[in-house]
Amino acid sequence: MNSIKETHFNFPGQTAFYKGKVRDVYTIDNKYLVMVVTDRISAFDVVLPEPIPYKGQVLNQIAAKFLQATADIVPNWVVTVPDPSVTIGRICDPFKVEMVIRGYLAGHAWREYSAGRRRVCGVSLPEGLKENDKLPEPIITPTTKAAVGHDEDISREEILARGIVAAEDYEQLEKYTRALYQRGTEIAGKQGLILVDTKYEFGKADGKIFLIDEIHTPDSSRYFYSEGYAERQAKAEPQKQLSKEFVRKWLIENGFQGKDGQVVPLMTKDIVKSISDRYIELYEQITGEAFIKPADDNVLSRVENAIKNALPSL
Image (tube, rainbow, N blue to C red):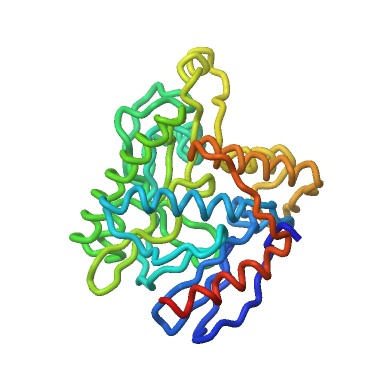
């Protein structure tokens, strides 16, 4: 009862419904999006079979906090947050790229580097780097946004050559991406964390660029603990991190990378609880606030009522 696997609501003025990997999105009057951040979890572009209690609330509340904290850099899509697991915002026409920015050599970039490749998304990397090393400067490594299947690496040059984003808009997206990452890095630093890498999504409405979706959450970002980072690097030890990478590593260790024929390993109650605990840990670490579990166990009813109460005031 305390997790949201899927929703099947019907709201006044509802004109469309979209079920994403982890979000259920309702369109209202073709003007607003009601985004329910469910407790589904995806890895390697596959939605895993078990929901993770409180994950949606963690993602939604962190995103809301950081969208508010960066509104002076770039306007964002949010109109109201009527429930811990819900955000309502304006409809934007999304750009068909995700702006990934990396300050450290970790995750996908490290996997590419360790395979011998020294260019990621058209960006050259120096020789002699180790996993989790700080990069000489943050690099932007965009991906295409796939409606189905895997997102794909793409370079700035390809984006412009293929007309995926107009040159003037893309230049602005890069500026916003660097400024947002700098702000996220500063906020994380105050909480004893390093913002290793993250991604941003943008859209346009009335000719204006808006920041959309979520930012600086454990689904869209990777964090290391600052304390002990240098010592662990010097000893070539794994970094203590807060991100979804631990889920990916657990899947890899159990023979799953989203490839054809592979089966998702059994997600026991202990595994599900451990993932939930890690999400709550990140919430408390990144926000500096205690995570509050809602008193109402009937989460679906709570969410539906919150949305219905919010819609008339839009």
